[in-house]
Image 1 (cartoon, rainbow, N blue to C red):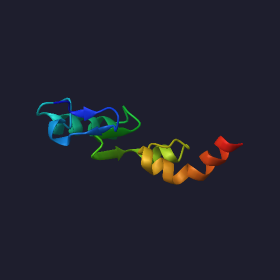
Image 2 (image 1 turned 180 degrees about the horizontal axis):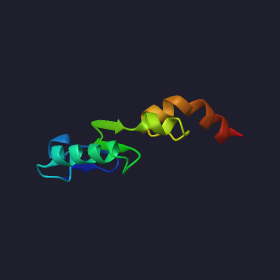
Image 3 (image 1 turned 180 degrees about the vertical axis):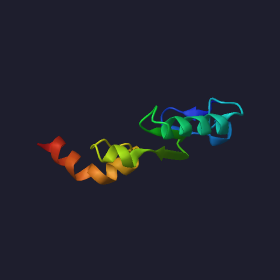
Image 4 (image 1 turned 120 degrees about the vertical axis):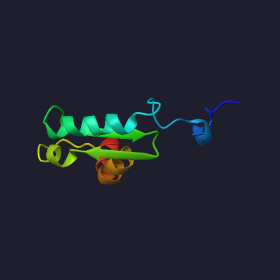
Length: 88
């Protein structure tokens, strides 16, 4: 049985793993947050198979006019601008 239907782009969530990490995701998450605090990275985005998206550091980047956001949140913010741009 296929785990996805390419015609509908729907996934069978029972057969999808949230991570490429088998068990150490918390350790990786903790380490990357330390890198963020120490200034080694500008932002940290953890996407768990689209079910949960965690964004860290976006507030500091926003001051520099850099947006780090989920696609759905970005669309809500700029949909009017994008629709105007695409129809012009």
